[in-house]
Image 1 (cartoon, rainbow, N blue to C red):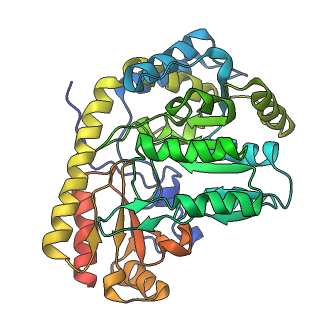
Image 2 (image 1 turned 45 degrees about the vertical axis):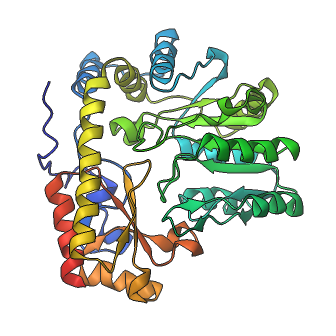
Amino acid sequence: MKFDFDKVVDRHGTKCLKYDFAKERGRSDDMLPLWVADMDFPTAPGIQKSLSDAVAHGIYGYSEGKDDYFQAAAGWYEKHFGWKVEKEWLIKTPGVVFALAMAVKAYTKEGDAVLLQQPVYYPFSEVIADNGRRIVDNTLELKEDGKYHINFEDFEQKVKENHVKLFLLCSPHNPVGRVWTKEELLRIGTICREHQVLVFSDEIHFDFIWSGEHHVFQEVDPSFREFTITATAPSKTFNLAGLQQSNIFIPNEKIRKAFIHQYQVSGLDELNTFGIAATQAAYNHGDEWYEAMKKYVWENICYAKNFIDQRIPDVKMNLPEGTYLFWLDFQKLGLSADELENLIVHKAGLWLDSGRIFGASGEGFQRINAACPRSTLQEALERIERAL
């Protein structure tokens, strides 16, 4: 089956955040948006068929996934990662960010320290601060090899000094694109095990690996299952974010019960009828579309790398190891954060994710979404070139 990822689909008027809420977000309507991490591609035909069938039924009452839902998801994980999950581990939630917030509330109390690694996906910081917990940052270090690395000594010191109870791991890392090695994850997990730190491992981007290998954190060492919450979702892989469906796996029964209790307290413990149908169809019938889409996105990323190296060399781009996002380094220009924002927003007419929202260590960077038609990406890069 052929898929036309070059086709530009007009998303205006569909109430999507990416295109229809520029004014509400302080932007102008003529800006080209490559910010929020959803795709500009229609999802797989099998998913569309499943949703059409669900709509045609005409009754959209309370719904839940049965054993065939679990088998579909479990089959995907085992096929792509060799990860064997148990049915009792699974908790289905309306999104990974929601699950992050539930974990913060379930496993910590107000004033407790929660560890993260900035620059990192900004809802990590929000769910900590908004729930009255303290953000502790083990800042990732950008080395000469162009990669971000973990300072393990600082990691352990921060854990001990702040009596950290919960660590939010981003794997693969958004926005810097690192795919953590087994050795890196083993070292982190060993520290957390020794100091009794729970790990919430957000692995939502694990279907986008360009170099290296994704290692499911809880499987790096058998003992890691006892203190790990693993978050997955079909939303990034199949462009289903609006259907609010994620799969959370917690092998430890006590930790799982605490999460379920907090989930029930929230009052939001019913699932989206269409999210269930789409997720099951994605994992059962989405492989061909997924492989074609992934190839196209990787070619987009390589196109961007070549364009930037040849035509805007004062901007630096390192190829991401994972995710469909790339992280542009504007530091050589010597601009302040406000000056860089002016360049991108007002001179280039682009709506990107400013690096500073990912933490202070993100200043001087911009995050771009490569999951779009090539012509859209080309236009964005040419706008930066003209602005410079």
